[in-house]
Image 1: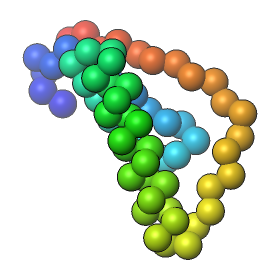
Image 2: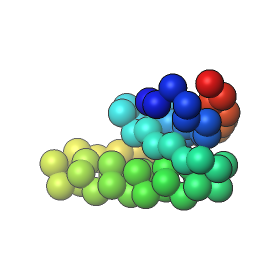
Image 3: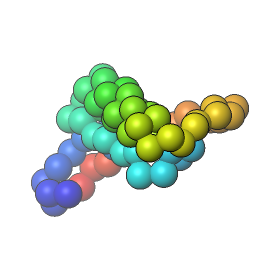
Length: 64
C-alpha cells in the first residue's frame, strides 16, 4: 500500500484472502461487498461450498 494512503481496509476473516479498501468508510463497505460476491462466485465455480457461521464485524481505520 502507498505510504501516503489514508483510508479503510475491510477484511472478511471467514473468507481467507477476501480483503478490500476504500478512501471512505462507505467506499470500503461497498468494495468489500463486491469482493465477497466475487469470492463466493469463484468458490461456487470451483465446486466449493460455503457455510456461514456466526461472526463479529469490525472495521479498522488506517492512518499513515
